[in-house]
Length: 209
Image (cartoon, rainbow, N blue to C red; front, side):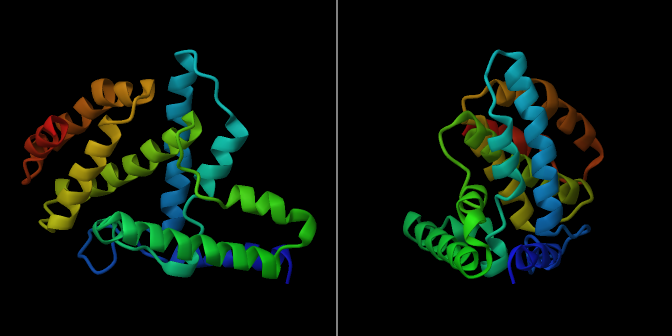
């Protein structure tokens, strides 16, 4: 079916709901998440550039826009499950990457296969672009969980998601992370004052870890 099969498959990302099985005031699809990650990442990269860091923008847009494409095949697996053990995370990643490779081999014209393998790979690595992707991905977890807690959603998964994402972000050595912690996170805390959940305390506990 050629590249048509890839274009058609993108609809599936709109039907995969994040944090499945839990009550949510707002539903978020994997497709919407991917779009937001790109928006976070480009602003984070702008901050890095303002501090003198060279950014490979082509790589950044490729890995951020396609970073969850493999969920078409395995769905959105909850973060606590996905990271229960390094062995389980490795196995899930192998399955996801294997199914993406199979899809490319079966559907993408040969002259485009190398391009698709590069674009649909796991983009999180030690490069500045890979680290920005990691921050942007976790930043969307922060905002999704924050929106639920702010409205009084008592599901423990959102507290866990918020806390875990903050812990991951704060341990990444980037200028954009320092900007987030010093300039953006205080605005989140300020906005949380009317929440029935003590988001300020949860934030302080996460930052202390």
